[in-house]
Image (cartoon, rainbow over all chains, first blue to last red; front, top):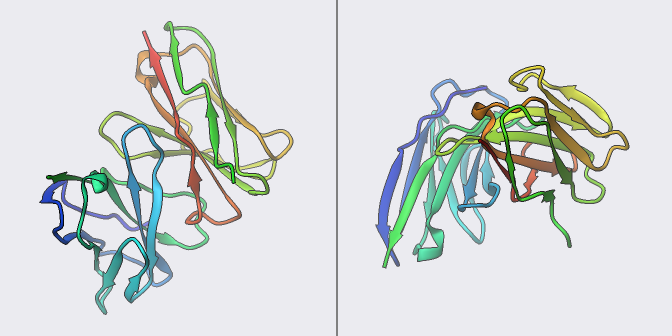
Length: 110
Length: 113
């Protein structure tokens, strides 16, 4: 499974757009990129998944350049409730395990 | 509908005691996963079941850790002779199949004193 690198922490203010970039230089052809969100005292929650270009859902957008060696999770107009740890994962769709890194701790201030 | 539930939510054990952590997956979910999450770290894979078959237990840290899912539904993670380094949150997740559709439970926080 490809290793991922992402910032340890980020700060933002309510109403701002937040972009969290993840590097995955050794991504394999059949690997997908998936982001999870984890609040304190809860298990991780799936946010978004993509293979290439751009994916958008009601929560976030995921931008993946053509070389797929990095990806950017974009959270529009964050609120205090978006304060959480965000994990970038890379792996084949049919992999039997998820490999989490240390994630990015996002703190949103009023 | 009901999500993944885990019990107990908190467990304090004296060093050397055995503990059993329970996971109730989402009904109909074939795959079940256990993870260990140390403070400030991401979850680490422990083991994986497909129905009652344990297909991967490569993440279990020692032979003191044992997991079972005898009827392909509820799963139990057992830790024998607990040590301080076993203190962590133990997360259970289930999916219809495949890793990326996993739904996680709230976890059991184990503290070994």
